Structures are given as structure tokens and as C-alpha cells.
Length: 276
Image (cartoon, rainbow, N blue to C red; front, side):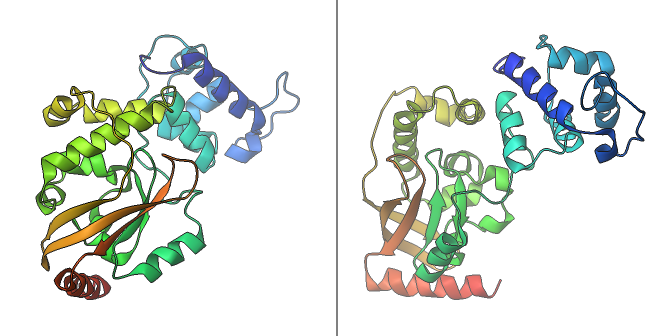
């Protein structure tokens, strides 16, 4: 269980197991029980894992836990969105079916994003996860709707998604800036498993490793960007971060056109997005 908080994971599973009744998961009542909640063998049966293996998991033994098993346990224990996220964090694993919404994305914020069209805008957290976006942003670098939610991360996309990569005119510079900002923000999240999991995933890219080994650190600042959109051509925009909380936390990212040609092309891109 390298990288996991095994004892915390075991305690979390025991606590959630003890709060459920047999009836809630479809088992018939079997009279008085010595302990509250489900038995270990019942959880193991529902999650299709061995009783001994599950017992070891609760005991923080040194065993491997796959995302498929974590998913089965989350469903078996009837975990809500926050509890499921916590389970995967404790196991230092990437949720294959993350929540599509986020507490920071309120209806009012989504409405603000939509009203900014045709100016591309999105909500991001400090890890560069894309939490929400308007129609123009959804077509700016690729068809973002077609990207699985777990891959909607600007850093991941800049190393793995060919259309996203080809849409950034100064790709190498952009990657260096993001890595430097990510390193600066990570100092506040050293104990957060989600940050370590993302960093581990990024390290599978030799390109990222080369950039990361520079040990550059950079704070946030407005800057000009150039994109090569597949539908309307080259765009020049000013990037601005509008912070929604403490520095280096969630933010609204906007890309305002710097010239008339870019403005007109963004309007055309918005029209294309509306036709999808």
C-alpha cells in the first residue's frame, strides 16, 4: 500500500461499515447483532472480494488496492460524493468516475461563465483541474466535452492530448509556467494525496520530468497567450485569473481578445460551439 494512509483507510472503512444496516444493502435482518452495522464478510460479499483480503485492508496490511475494488467498496458502503472522494484520496488513487460537479461551481458561477461568452472562461483549482467552463472555452483548445472528466486537467492535457498541444502556440513555455506555478502551489498541499497522485501521473511523461527537474517556482500573473484554434485560426488573448478564495485556490480564468480580429474569431468559435 505504498503512498496510502493505510491506518486511516482502515478506520474509514470500519466507520462506514458500522453505520449501515443489513436492510440498507439488501440483506434480510438476522436478529440481534453483537456489533452495529455490516459484518466484514457481508462487505466482502457485496464488493466481490475475499473476506481475508478485506480484513487485511481494514487492518492496514501491506496489500495492493485497485481502483476497481475501491469503486466496488464505495458502491457497497453507499458513500456519497465527498466520502467517495475521501476514500480514493486515502488510497492515493485516481477515481475513474469522479464527481462531475464541485462545491465551488455554484449555479451563479456557471451563469457568470455562460454570460462571458464569447470570451472563453473556465473555473480551475490550483492543480489545474478544469471544474467548469463556458461554450467558447469548451472549443478553444479541443472539444473539451469529449474529454473524460478525470482527464480535464490543463497539465495532463498539455502532455497527452495532441489537439490541445497543437493549439498552444508556445507550448514549451506554457508547460514551464504551469509546472512552476504548480510547484509553488504544492507547498500548501504536501500532505494532500490528490496532489501526489497527479504528480505521479505527470511523471510518466519524460517531457514533464525534464521541466519539473528545473525546480522553477512562479506565482500567478496576467499574461498574453496565443492559440491556434482548429476552427477559426490564430487567436491572441490576455489571460486573467479572478480568484474565488485565498491565493492559489480556485479561480475563474478568462481569455479576453487583444485585437479586433481575435474578437471576431472568438465570436465565430462561439457560434460553432452553439451548433454542437
